[in-house]
Each structure stands twice: as C-alpha cells, then as structure tokens.
Image (cartoon, rainbow, N blue to C red; front, side, top):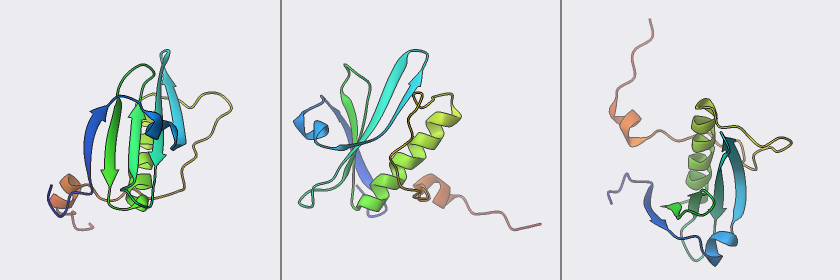
Length: 114
C-alpha cells in the first residue's frame, strides 16, 4: 500500500465487530438491500463495512475517520445516482463530508477555465 493510498479493502463474513458499528445508511433497489456501517475504535483504524444481508462484508480501512466518512458519503451518492433508494421514511446518518479526490482524479490535470 502506497503513501497516497487512503485505505485497504477486503471481504469477510459479518461479525460481532461489524455489529458494534454505526449504521450510516441503507439502500434498496429491486428488492435488494445494501447497508453501510462505520466502525471506529480509537485503538484501530476506522473501517467502512458495506454488506448485503447473508453475504460477506466488503471492508475498507482508513487512516482517519473523516476519510472513512467521506468514502461512505461518496458511495451513498454514487449508488443513489445508479437507482438505489433510501427506504421510505429514512435519512442517511452521514455528516456532510465532501468526498476527497480519488487517486485516479488526482492523476488527471484539471482543464483551465474558458
């Protein structure tokens, strides 16, 4: 993992530690559900867990809580743009954190204004 890499990712079965996190949001699409949980323990790195019921969690660790929350917020916006919806009567539990620039975006120079 390079110095510019904001996190690491892996899949694992849901566990008690995932259950101890805070659910940030849950989305639905065509009868499927996806949930985002953040787990932060001051002794370990913050983690974002993405899971569908009955499947292993996709876990990504971060070096700072604000980066984890920005990642969760960016995922929420991307999924909603692709047709995923909040269950009726719910709102996301994410602070309004602007997503950080991805390494791919950072490699592409910005175009000058016209």
